[in-house]
Amino acid sequence: MENNHLIAPNTVFCLKMASDQTQIRLDKYLCAQFPLYSRTFFQQLIIQKLITVNGISQIKPSLLLKAHDDIIIKFPGEPVIDVSNKIDPQLPITIIAEHEHFLIINKPANLMVHAPQHESQEFTLVDWILKNHTEIANIGCIDRPGIVHRLDKDTSGIIIIPRTNFAHTQLSSLFANRAIHKTYHAIVQGHPEKSGIIDAPIGRCKYNKTKMAISPGTTGPVRNAISHYTVLEYFENSSLIEIKPVTGRTHQIRVHMASIGHPIIGDKVYGTLSPLIDRQALHAYSINFEFNHETHYFIAPLTDDIEKTLEKLRCKAI
View 1 (cartoon, rainbow, N blue to C red):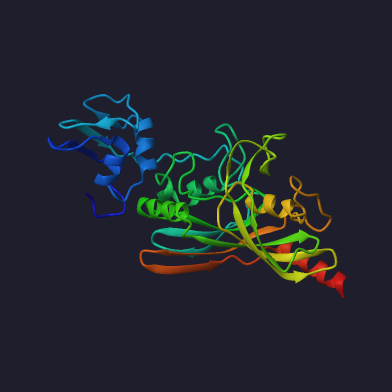
View 2 (view 1 turned 30 degrees about the vertical axis):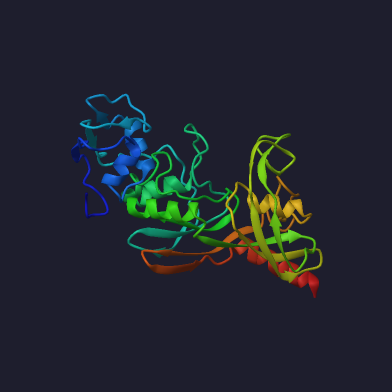
């Protein structure tokens, strides 16, 4: 329906279902009318009561539309950004690449991607986005604008932030179809085999709900999880590995490496604390994907704390 990447704030559209239109979910219908916008985007508009069907705003995204239904959509106004109650710790967030449709960010450790609950006062990557890139405020979910994937708080490295609803939709689809390939570097305890494939389903730990675990030590549903790893360098009692997760489960790399007896050093949840580094030595090193018929490949250099840890390990090995 529209040719631009974004529709002007406060624009109103009045649509009417055709007489021969078959029944269709409201959110799916809207996506068909506005293909540059995601279902998540319209689901948020429905929650905000910015969409009415036959004059009724108390509706669900799953509402089945029928012939002659009248749909009115009001696109959001300019976002009101207020992160004044958050303390900006001046974390070294750097932009690796700036594309018309997305940003490639190098996230530092000790930074959450988004708040775990609304009341949280901890500064997050989302706060940084809202403060420095206000055009992203209406992209995707209201509480996590521009977020299509995440890294753990203490994992550093590369993350992609869509800048348009078109990119949000396309990148979400690429992640869902495993068409975005990420490579991580990690320092693990001990000496794993030179290379290997870990194929072990992951679910919520039955003994500690804040942790993930390998089945059968789980409760509730489990999901398949596959990781490929290669050892890059052996040290006296540890190893530098490259690991490529095929799936993207919560804590997948940390759980998988711990499951084969080689937890990531400094991982206080799935391993033990380390005198060499004050967080898990895990870094999202690179990402590659095809977007708009172009192949993109980006690298986030290792952080200073991981580089210094490697220097100490190499010196110790001499």
